[in-house]
Image (cartoon, rainbow, N blue to C red; front, top):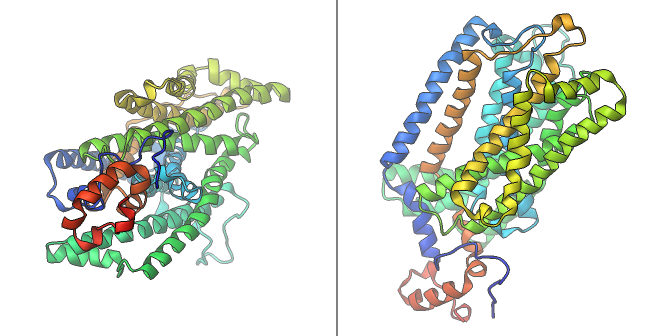
Length: 477
C-alpha cells in the first residue's frame, strides 16, 4: 500500500490521469496559435530585427561603433557573453545533475530549462564572434583547423581557446540531451496527429520510437549516459569562462576564488531565468497542476542558497585584496565600491545578496507575483556583477593618464536587445511546436505524486479508458 508523503506537497495536482496529462500538454501544440502568443512572438521578432540592424551596421563599419576605448577594450560584449552563458547553466543542472540524484521535482521543469540552455548558449556564442570585428576573416584563428597561411595554429595556452572547446562541447551535449528527451513526446504527438504534415514532421523527429520495453530501456540508458557526460559540464564551462579573467594579471581578476564563485553565480542566474519563464508558461498554457508551487518553492530555495554563496564571494574578494598587501589590488576593490561605478556595484549587491534573502520567508517564496519580480531583479543584478567585474577593473589602469570612463553607445544597447529578441523568438517557437513539459517523465511520477486522488479517479474511469491508459487491477488498490 502506497502512502502519500506528509512532508512534501504532491508534484502533480488536480487528480490527473495519464490521459489528462497527454491532453493538457499536447493541447498547446495541436491548437492554432492564440492571439497572446502571436503578440508576444511579434514583439520578439521586432526586437530581433531592430537589434539586428544595429549589429549589422556595427559589423559593416567595425566595432568602433561600440563604446570601447583604449583602456576598456572588454566591455558590453564580454559582459553579455558571460551573462548568457550563466543563464544556460540551470538547464544542465536541472536535467543532468538532478536526474542522477533521482530528484523527481525536476520532471515538470526540465524540458523548458533544457531549451533555455540551448537558446542562451546560442546568444552567448554571438558575442565572441562579433567581438572579432570581421568574423569571416578572424574566425579561423579561433579554431584549430589547417589553413592556407602556412604552419599556423591557435594558441592552446589561451583561455579564449578553452572557451571555444568548452562552450561548443556544452552546446553539443546539451542539444543532444534535450532532443533525446523529446523523442517519446514527439511519438505521442505523431500518433495523435490529424494532418499529413504533422504526422510527417513529428514522425521524423520521433525517429521510429514505438514505446516497446526494449525501446524504453535504450532510451533510459542513453539518458543516464548523457546525464553523466553533462554533469561535469556544469562545473567546467563556467570555470573555464572564469579563467578568461583569473589567469590574467589585472588587479581584481587574478584570483583563485573565481571558478567556484562563477559557477555559483551561473546557477543563481540560471534558476532565476527558469523561474521567470516557468511562471509565464504555467499561466499562459494553464499548467498549474504540473508546474506547482512545490516546484517554484524548491527553485526559490536553490536561488537563496546560491545567492548566499555569491554574497560570501563578494566579501571574500575584499578580504583577499586586504591580505595580499598589494595596493593595486586593494584599490581595484575600493574603487568598485566607492568609485565612479559605485551605482553599478551597489545595484549588484542589492539585487544579488539582499533580494534573495526574502525567500527565507515562507509567504514570500509562495507568492507568484513577488517571485516573478525577484527572478527579474536577480538577473539584473547578475548582469551588473559581470559589468562590475569587467569594466571597473579596466577603466582605471596602472597609469592615471590612461584612466577613462566607459559609456555604452546605441550599438551596444541594441546589440544586447537583439539577443533578447533572438532568445524569446526561439523560446516562443519552442513552446508552440514542442511540448513544454516532459509528458513521459511526469507520467512516471504520477502515482507517487498524487496517489490517493490518482487511484480514486482511475478506479472509476478504468473501464472507459483506452487500453494503453488503463491501470492493472492489482494497482487500483
